[in-house]
Length: 336
Image 1 (tube, rainbow, N blue to C red):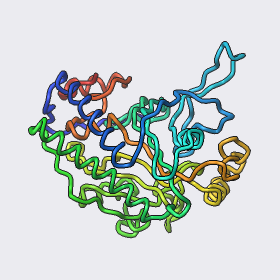
Image 2 (tube, helix red, strand yellow; image 1 turned 45 degrees about the horizontal axis):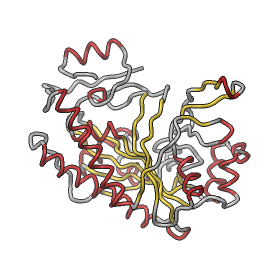
Image 3 (cartoon, rainbow, N blue to C red; image 1 turned 135 degrees about the vertical axis):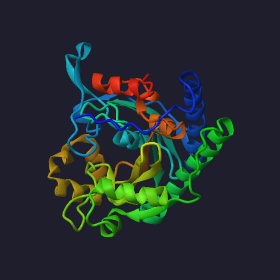
């Protein structure tokens, strides 16, 4: 069921056409900052993959894919990608990229089960990135170093936008706060995960919540994560406070990827041991793929945040329920 939040007295700071120009400026600037900060080079990526490759992701573990058959391949079934986490790791091995360097790509996807609201669309556009690391880099310290580099890129983007559009005025804190999902539950035991994120984001304005996927002391995970790409002990979300929407605002989900031990453990916990027979999973278990760290950074989400928009439909074209379109029109929210 879709839901919509209408900010009180909302008025776009810059108009539709100037927003279009600003979107391009933001995307061009940030991808250069990201590539420089993490030593990445841009590559092309697939829009669809075959199911038997094991390369597609079911994200939180329950989302359905968009499937179709290809006439000239004897009606072979293929799936629209939901994430490129696994494909990127395969690509790094294929390209022979060395530790300390990586790739990024423009990822486009369709997520048919997304609940539509101000920040969620069935159309996904993000920078997907992945970097080769050494086995000994699989530590919390290394993960935080990567997060710091991404946050510097975000800070630099904020300065860039403020120079070009001073009326937008974005003010991020100098440093990002680190907290584990268990520490957050301990801090707010009577709140649900979404409410906890709102509290810590409002307090700190920029936070990295780590260790997402496994069960907490409460017996429930902070959030769902597929068992076969992030290591649940070495992952997390970059979250900012969005004062337009008055809520926590996820910019990136990322993490150090599973090695042979953590994937085997997480598949067993999730009851997904049958995946060990898929091509990708076999390569992980046989240590045929590089150890990596990676993630996704929403392009439209980034633009929405820095342009101070109330709805992601103001910065990307998608489909929306008629009732949502009507309410947005009545509230000066211009959906593309």
